[in-house]
Amino acid sequence: MAKEMFVQLSDFQLFAKLTGENKGKPTVVMDAGYGDSSKAWDSIISDISMLTEVLIYDRAGLGKSEKSSKSRTSSEMVKELNELLYRAKIKHPYILVGHSFGGVNARLYATEYPNEVSGLILVDSTPEDYREKFLPTMSKEFREAYNKQFVYEGNYEEFMGSLKQVKESRRKLNVPLIVLSAGKKAHYSEESQKLWNEMQKEILEISSNSEFIVAENSAHYIQNDEPEVVIDAIKRMIEKF
Image (cartoon, rainbow, N blue to C red; front, side, top):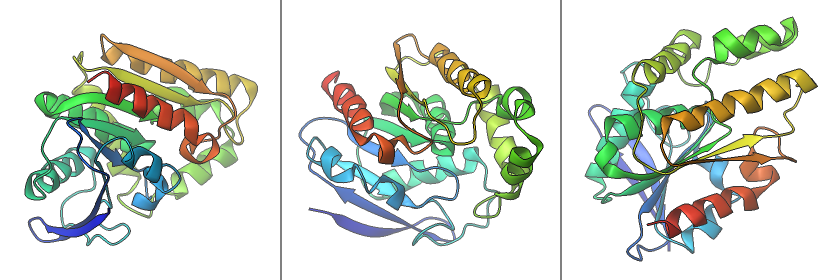
């Protein structure tokens, strides 16, 4: 059974939806990519909610959530998520699942609140050195299109500020980590695809217990292209508990 709620934070409300039931396992908390609402998880949510309780939510200014007056950087979003979970009385431990930019938030959350997190799954997450290491290898058209997309939540500076925050706070985490990398990215040359997978693999270093999986037939939205890969990763993470 799904329970929808609007949770009041300082000067705005966040929309969240809780599905599934707590069977003594961690609650799965899912954070979508940049500009995406919680609907980004529609393809897998019913499968996951058969396993345990799942919380999806819309970050401020997206989907059904109101806008926040605070800056749109990961550190603010992580505080807001923490407050949302507290006010909605969702008890930890959590398994955090972050797609793309949501993976940046999930990493920072696990760093800021290590005692609340029992597992971390990053779904084609944005690497911290994306601007320095990856963007320069792409075509001028790709870079221009990339820079123009930052109009949905937070601007280019705030997004890059978030990558800086996750880089500066980086330390070894004592939680199991699964990194899923998309193996068939749109508009990527063979070299770019190889570099992308390598940069995804480097994220493994943040945990002493990590696993790397390439979703060979997936573009950026692995949860849509190969949902079973994401579902299986979450299932195995739940079983570790």
